[in-house]
Every structure is written in C-alpha cells, then in structure tokens.
Image 1 (tube, rainbow, N blue to C red):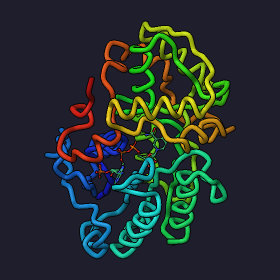
Image 2: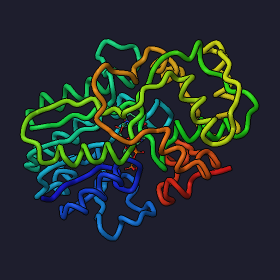
Image 3: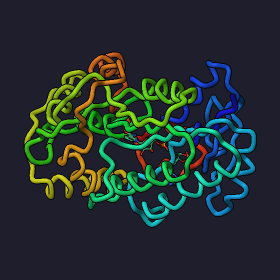
Image 4: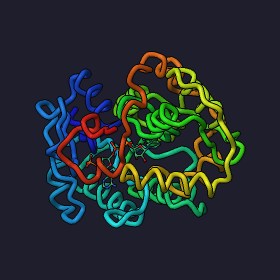
Length: 312
Ligand SMILES: NC(=O)c1ccc[n+]([C@@H]2O[C@H](COP(=O)([O-])OP(=O)(O)OC[C@H]3O[C@@H](n4cnc5c(N)ncnc54)[C@H](OP(=O)(O)O)[C@@H]3O)[C@@H](O)[C@H]2O)c1
C-alpha cells in the first residue's frame, strides 16, 4: 500500500513510518519540516503540509491508500493555535477524501471531550467528530502520554530530577496516567492500516501510575531519588514559567496541569501496549533527562532532528 504519515521526521510519525517500511509499504510524509534531518529522508519523500493550499495537499495524497494523521499543536502561542489546528485538521481530512484516500488512522488523546474547558481535549473531540462526519473509514487511537527517546514530558521530569533537590507535584499528585511506548503506538497504527471497521482504541501502556509515583519511579531509576512534595498548582505553574524563561520554552501550561489533575490521561480500559515505562527508563537511564527537550525549539527550527535540538 501507499501510506502517508504526517510528521514522519518528528516523534511518533517516525516510528510509524519505520514500521510501515518494514512491512514493505510505500511511505510518504506530509510535513511542515521537510528539511528536518532524519535517517528516513532517503526512504520517505516529503510533501508540504500546506493547509493554505488544500488542493495541493490533495495532489500530494494522490494514489495514497491510507493516511496516518499525527498533526496537532500542544498549546496556543503567537505562532500556532488550537483553533487553527482544528481547521487545519478538517482541511487535511477533506484533502484526503478528495484524493480518494480509503482510510484514515488518526492519533488523538485519551478522554477528548467537546464540553471540556480545556482546549486540547475539546479540540481533539471536535477533530474526531470531523473525521467521523467525513464519512471516511477510520481508526482513532487515543494515547495518554507517549514515552520514547524523543519524548518531552518524561524526559523533562528526569531533567528536573537530575538538577533539583526536591520535586514539586501539583496538588497531591494522586491523579493517574498510563504512558504508552511510542513504538507500541506505532505498532497499533500500522495494524490499523489494514483494518476494515471503524474503531476507537484507548492506546495505553501496561502500567498505571499516580503522577507522584511516576516521578518517584523515574527519580529512582535514573539514580536521582528526590523528595517529592505537594505544591499548589498555581505555584507549580509559576515555577514552570520561571523554568520556561530559563530554557526559552513553554515547560507546562495551566491547561496541561488541569488536564493531569482531572485524570484526562487515565482511562478504565485494558492496556494495549506491552512496554513498561519502568523497564524502558531502566534501559535508558544513562541518558534520560541529561538534556532538556524543548517544544518551542522543534517549532522554530525545522532543520535539526528532535535529538539534535536537545540542550543543556
Ligand atoms: N507526545 C505525547 O506524549 C502525546 C500524548 C498524547 C497524544 N499525543 C498526540 O499524538 C500525536 C503525535 O504527537 P507527537 O508528540 O508524536 O508530535 P510531533 O511528532 O512533534 O508532531 C506531529 C505532527 O504535528 C505537527 N506539529 C506539532 N506541533 C505543531 C505546531 N505547533 N504547529 C504546527 N505543526 C505542529 C508536526 O509538524 P512537522 O510536520 O513540522 O513535524 C507533525 O507533523 C498528536 O496528535 C498528539 O496530540 C501525543
């Protein structure tokens, strides 16, 4: 099959593209970072993710059987907004339909919710609706936190644990989350390429942690066990802003804190991934958190790999 993956030189898209190539599929990518350094560039041709020119996107998708969509934004900024991301996702689905794409595998998030006051989760629900309304055959994968070499959240928790004597969790830290390994998610996505039914799958890994337990487990694993203290969410957010100014990034948003505390990254369904975060962190403890992973650096620099963009 010919399969198009958004962002194949980025994070989850690169694992998905690798698995597709291993299966012998022809793979292309739609991306805003066609110049990004990646070992996949020679094997996965890039076409621009040009939302302003949907006809061009449809042309790029010509002959494509399945589109795997990872496109989304993490927060609002001067450069990008959730509102645009919703509109852009609709344009991408319409372009896929116009191009005759038969199926879309769409990466969403656990607990999307049209009624939520959190734009991330509300926007994700609207995009899922748009996909269903498009009438295209689809699989919707809803991961919680995705961990892997190019991850941001887990890596940056480890980065802070390596540098600070204590670690503050928002509130009591008792809210749960179920991280999934990026290549387990990729395996699900590639399996969904050959699916026939419309489906929605909670893509969660085998371990459920409270946020506090996860921080403690990461600290112990990388050899930096720290006292974990409860802090008011507003204080945690203020600390995140100070750190953000130092590393020139958005470390965490108010909405992300609220989403964590509302247990938006927890679902009551069986795990589908098999890789444990604790095992993976053990195997990768020598480098995990040595360098800071910046979201904004990825959005500003479209030429260096996510790995090369780590700093500190
Ligand atoms: N990472 C997690 O822990 C996590 C957890 C739950 C759900 N998800 C979902 O999983 C999907 C893939 O996430 P990922 O972490 O693997 O992301 P990623 O590879 O960094 O980005 C995926 C795609 O979105 C584009 N993109 C990301 N931020 C953008 C921005 N601000 N403006 C314009 N384009 C942007 C990328 O652009 P380029 O084309 O320039 O590469 C790429 O095409 C997303 O839908 C996300 O919501 C992620």
